[in-house]
Image (cartoon, rainbow, N blue to C red; front, side):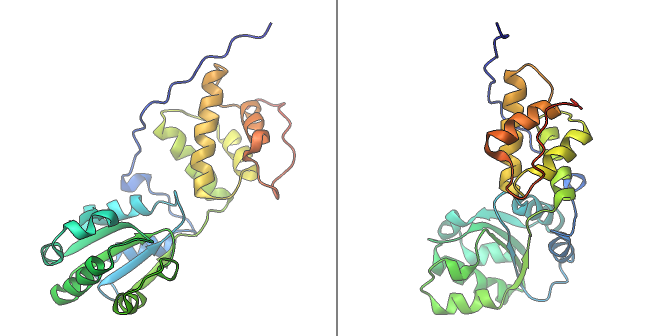
Amino acid sequence: MSEARQLPLELPLAERRGREDWIVSAANAEATALVERWPDWPGEVVFLLGPEGSGKSHLARLFAETSGAIVIAAADLASHDPTALAAAGAVVVEDLGPGVAEAALFHLLNAARQADARLLLTAATPPVAWGLGLADLVSRLRAATPVALAEPDDALLQALLAKLFADRQTLVDPAVLAFVARRMERSFAAAHDLVAALDREALAAKSPVTRAVAARVLAAGFGRADGDADLDESGDA
């Protein structure tokens, strides 16, 4: 009779977002360098584009700490006075996308130009995908300096996995992280989902996150089609 598995509890995470926790790689080096050039930007507005989980909010918060920027959510744009925001000298607007308050964003862009303020805008999709109807807003967004966070390579995935586990106060052997990074879907969103699944599986099995645990979770649907097909559970690193 197998040992009973315990039911893992979902505990709140203390995600670390300091500069020392920001992992620089080829996927984000250009964006990091541009954001850290503040206030010496090519123009008033930088448009930071990246997939879910790529670190847009982390990088935006680092910018805010450096510049003293006000950080607001795109969903709250219409409730802010654009002139007052621009007067702060730097503003971050996070999670722009379809349904954005077009007039409010347009007025903020105008106010930033008049005040020579700096705006950092973040989004998961480019403005062309938002279905914008305000032609002047489309023109202003096209004039912004774009910079993208690319999907990670295996080295960045391994470093990201280590950070995500550290956020959960869990240490995992680097050999296990390398095993996982070579076989998982290569995306930031997948890394977040996979770490949560690995943590749940390890807790339920009352085990550390070993290669055997990782192999089971990867085989359950978290592996990538072009990854190493060897999911042998032997060699519990």
